[in-house]
Length: 393
Image (cartoon, rainbow, N blue to C red):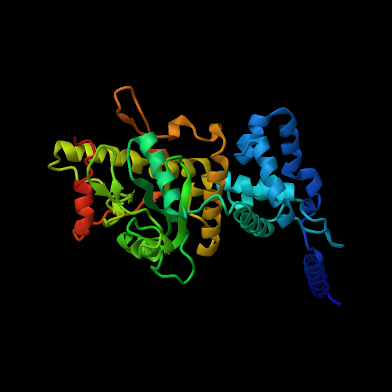
């Protein structure tokens, strides 16, 4: 055998040996040393010594984290196998919360957790499923007229806006273009998105969320594509009948407040346009705008507390819907804590009743729906808005 033939044979043997090694290698060595490298070791130290740093990592304080872990543990726990040791619920929940808090890539998170990106994707989705399941009662529409009236009482007592039963708005949530989707998710902002539609109460809480309408749908039609929109249109929400406003002899309907992205109806009113306002119309706009800003404030809090909204989601729309819904449920879960609502993220008034806005960057991280110019609002809605002068004698 010539020297050239011998060299070729050795090269073939080396290539074959490398291939055999690759086929036998089912996990990187440092993944197998997860107990040594996992972020759980750091978090357990922080739980004992630096609770503020622990909270910064997962965006929940220690008590909230332990409560949530107790709720989801059985749903996300896996059994050990002969091949590998299962990742415990503590790690699954904490790395999911870290993803929601930062929006970091899975490639980045693998170095925090010593978990492969493929497994991280599965863990995040499974944990989101579990969170949605255990917190599913935290977001629900009132079911009776009396429950709607309680929502209205909160708006009246806190924002001096009688008969308001919810502030409604929608935002575009950016996603990466799904393969083969064409322009289906392409919106007026020239990005790809799905729409988050929400109604909130006077206490900065979601009472309805609908996620998933493709961004290409005309923004004025988004509401019609939701179950809530159809129920509102068909009078199927058990909204109380019109009643007298305080200090008035006129019966007016209970209604949601929105902006120019939605056409008015009897139970959905919005402010007047800013030109040619009379004194009465300015007063109406002031009161209604105070109530409507609840939903803007909630979106601002959501986008700031959960960094996952700060970049386009890399998952398919079904998974994005699950992640966004999880953030909404966690928002209501965390709302119980006073420290969750930072004053810098809330609309408030100064001593002269002027409204102080949160920084626009924080509030409008989620793209707004496009305003519509339709003039076909129902006459009954226009009349209700004109009659919203409840200070008459």
